[in-house]
Image (cartoon, rainbow, N blue to C red; front, top):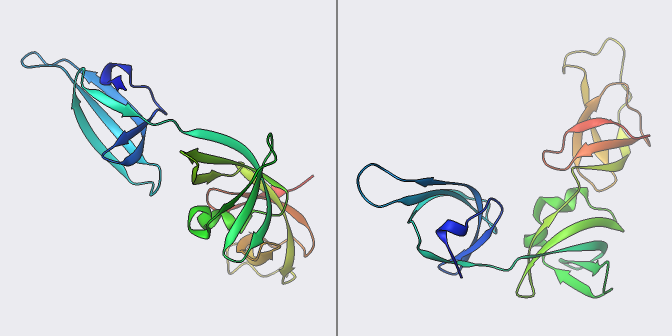
Length: 186
């Protein structure tokens, strides 16, 4: 238990059984009336952002959210199997929890898994990953109708847009937040 005076950015709160991260907060002391705290909260599970106002000094439940360094091992049916880098314990995580992150994960990929009371809640990937292009058409020198990009299929199966000079079997860097091409890998 903590009070609204103890709020910090990044803190995880348990409000009515749901987990919310504090994105930003502001203590307000109006000229008339009691002080209050205006917050912007982001749902840990859905990513939905809401504004919520608390009276100053009100008690709030702080959720203990553990972030573990884990390695993606393999896919087992619909589940993904991860191994804790410190304890070597394995954890099955559902495809719903992994979500679109599966498009950027290869075996032995290092990730951070958010765990609350033994339940995996989310997966954080590095900002960029190195992937190999498995198929792309050769780029033609006069072909500029598509703005200088062409589709390419990566080894994970996702299709992204790459510049015309990129060839098949090249390693490239991909932004895991939006799937954008960042450049050639060294």
